[in-house]
Length: 121
Image 1 (spheres, rainbow, N blue to C red):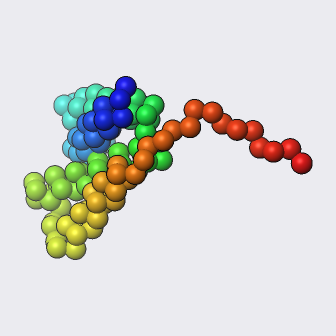
Image 2 (tube, rainbow, N blue to C red):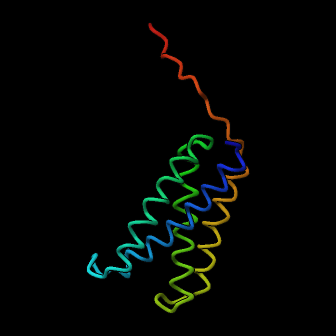
């Protein structure tokens, strides 16, 4: 898997994270069938995508991007649908989250295959 493909999978997984988070809220404690099914399917696919992405992207970076983008999309959707009020400061901070995720993407994604043993005294 190429690094670009790993990032594409990660971004798709972050979108799915926003979908499952929204469905979780709509499931009313898993008492509503349709949102519960959407939650279950998209949560599984999102986790699988994250798992695939960390084969090429360091775990800490991948997780931060996944959570950040997913959270920003979840809040953005809630504001767009009127579930949550929008404010200039909220928009600024969400923009900051997305900017930080983009910054992490811009960093080199070297992954060390070999773990060295600590030096013995």
